[in-house]
Amino acid sequence: ADKNLTTDEKNKQKQDVDKAVEDAKDAIDKAKDADEVNKAVEDGKNKIDAAYKPGTDLTNHRTDAKHRIDEEAELVKGQIARDVSLDNKAKAEQTAAVDAAATAVKDRIDAAGSLESIQKVVENGIKIIDSKHVTNPISLADQKKYAQQLINDEAAIVKELINNDPTLNDVVKAQQAREVDTQAQKAIDKISAAADAQGVKDEYEAGIIAIHAQHVAGNGLKELKEVAKAELDQEANTIKKAIAKDAYLTQEEKDVQTARVEFETEKAQNAIDRAETAQEIKDLRDAAIAVIDAQYVPGIKGNDSGSNG
Image (cartoon, rainbow, N blue to C red; front, side):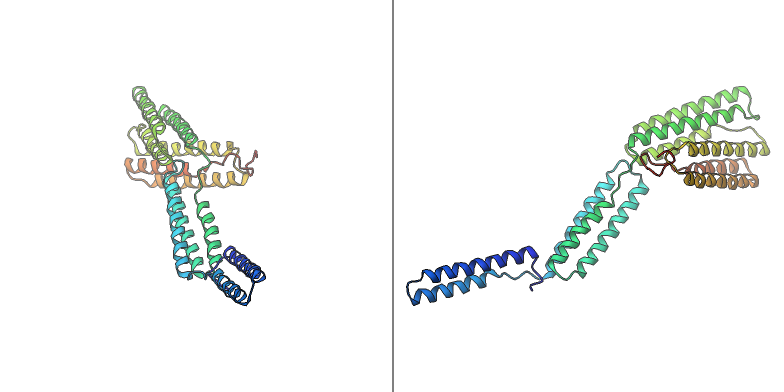
């Protein structure tokens, strides 16, 4: 009935009691006179009584259990922080999930009514906390590869836009195209050197901005608007093609992402139509490209829900 003992401790003490009883009986059988019998009985009682060792108060057990949960939470948060496959957003989300799980487990420890219950809560709680660290299924090497390919694709798009820009002469087109290549290579090199997923993301985003910055249309607000909107159409088509070719997305996922691309493109083009300066057009274009790109969320290789299994 001692709630401060675990089942294993109770069983061990019961075994000790049984052994003390058997030892006492043996001693009584071997006694040669009444005094020895009395002594065997008294010794037996003492050993039987000594076999029961009351468990300690649950307060200390709860404190120790919570400390174990805190230690596990810190351990897992450290693993998350060092996971190079995760960007800052994923790390923050997983860290918050660990903290929430740890708090919930400690609340359950407070509610536990026995030492055994506390131990079960801790055991299950550690599993829950550990499960909050989820490494990105796309390795850092693959993340770099994808980002570099997107940089090359973006450079090709911008060079085509430069070549088709009616406001630029051939000399300026050649100069701007060379600068696009230079910025693309810089971005690729920096992505290669990135130490983690956040570094890849930062260098990719910076590279996209730098590449687009090399295309500077000639004077004429109307022409600038048309060029900017054409860039968004080109960007939207590229992203929609990438979505359509992604073998690891379901058709429903493709339809949803494509619709989002089209919505963001139209919204940005309407804003460009209302722009009053060349700088405003450029800012709207740059921001919209990032938004359009963000609508494509690649499927995960090995996900059986994909269109090609």
